[in-house]
Every structure is written in structure tokens, then in C-alpha cells.
Amino acid sequence: MVQRLTYRRRHSYHTKSNRTRIVKTPGGRLVYQYVKKAASHPKCPISGSVLNGLPQRRPMDLSNKRLSKKNKTVHRAYGGHLSHAVVRERIVRAFLIEEQKIVKKVLKLQKAKAAKA
Image (cartoon, rainbow, N blue to C red; front, top):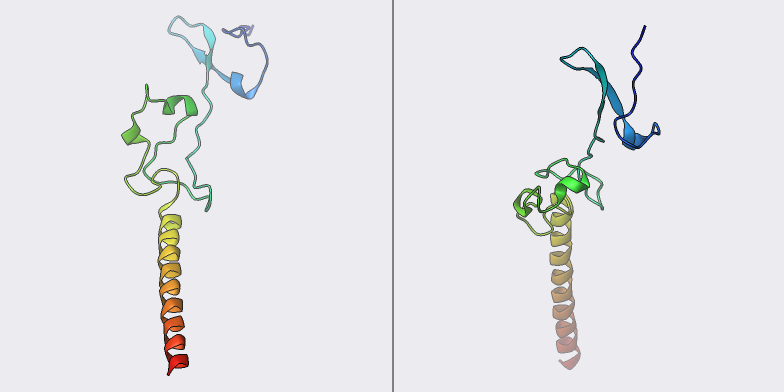
């Protein structure tokens, strides 16, 4: 006859947060062992790509008690939040906008100079 199993905690419903597996103890008994939820990789909110250099952890494990700040960031502008490609694109875009402003200014000066002459 098969041994009956009961949950070891008070949560009695078969939900995602109450997943278990059956394990045989050294004494020969079958007991439930609780399985933690799988953690997902942190992703860039803009490109949706996986952020490299960051651990794949559950939110509770990212607290400062369990994981220090140096393990949760990348030493770069927006490191640990945006992907390198997005940061690069933003820097290039900002540079090109500034260049465009300078070009407009120069053209305006040349036009004013030509109108004077």
C-alpha cells in the first residue's frame, strides 16, 4: 500500500507557491520537500534583452542582507538597469543632437553674415 503524504506547512492548496516534490528520507519515509520558485534573469525595460553580469535571483534574495550592492550592479552609467546597447544608443543620440545644434548655429551665423554683405 502507498504511503499517504500531507503538507508540512499550513498552506493546503496546490498552487504555484506551494509546489512540492516527494523525497525519501534515510529512515525510509516519504515526505514532501518544498520547491522554491525559479528566478528569472533581470531584463532591460527598453530592449527586453537579458542584463549580463547580474545574478538570477528571487526578489527576496536581492535584499542588502543577502546580496551586497556590488553584486547587483554593473559599473557603468545605468549599469544593472539598462543594457549596454541602449546606453550606447542614448550617448550617440545625445552627441548627434548636440552636433546638430552646433551646425544650425554655424549656418545661422553664415546666413546672417551673407545677408550683411
